Length: 394
Image 1: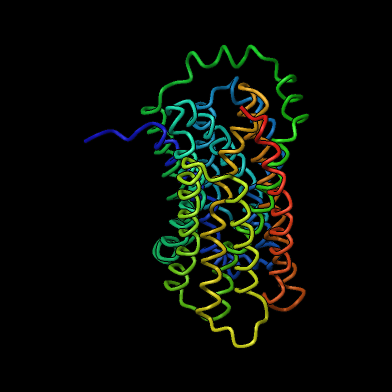
Image 2 (image 1 turned 90 degrees about the vertical axis):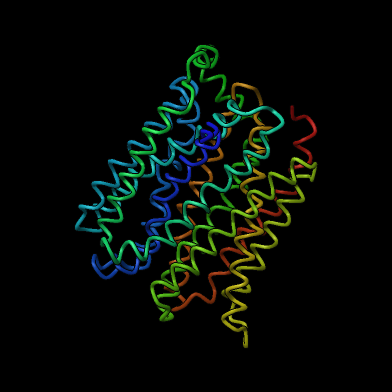
């Protein structure tokens, strides 16, 4: 049997980390009843896993080359295993909130160095295509969690679901340690350039800011919509099994956009065009799904969710490729990706609580599309600046 390519194994490690982000939505109906959690608290549980990325994304990006990209990922997987194991023992919302924040640190340590590690492991002509696959790690992990979560929670209870994913992260750490080449000779060169210079180079360049804030406009609305779907369906009386399948499909179709973006970039399609298509689809899809249209059938609303997620999936794959291209120097790729992860985390931290607040204030989900629509409009404005930044890119 042919061994899995190291770069693909990095993607699988990302998927195993994303399972921890996706494990919460199918458990929310059970957790809200067991721990008396409000909609706003539920929003923070969804987004608190991004707290570490919001606070430390840039710092971890600066440190990753010195620590070692592979070592960074291993530390994150172990931290996820420990925090998830302890989370299964939580008896109060406050303890679960704290452990979600710790899981966020583990998730950051796994996801932040991965694009740079993939870039190191593959030939230059394969980078765009493989980064398209990397862009799919979040929707794939989320979809698997949403599909399997309702059944496993029924069988194991929500604590057993937490423990199972903790064991999976530990197993993934062992596999990654064995199968991916060590950091070795890559450490001295990256240590040679002072971190303060890399920080100054990154934050003084326009490109890293562009991809970072654009990612925030995407990530906040995607997690808010997909993360609350199980709660919306539960309130509508949809059964647990059907709810899991419908929500998992909504997350899974995002993979189509991610992988397609890598292939289209490989064929020379301008990244600006992919970003325009993605944000337009997200704006119109959310409006079709949630706006108070008279006569809109449930099937039509669900199809709007699928369009929102699938075409919007072209955005992260494109932005990961742009982060590599728009980094101001060879030694600032990890720092640029860290800055992008930090703003992605800001979006994911702010989006679900804001959408949950709008829903609770209005007494329903009919006006939440205004939040996602504002994010899409901002994303379109940011995308309009991309072409001017690509001209001087390497």
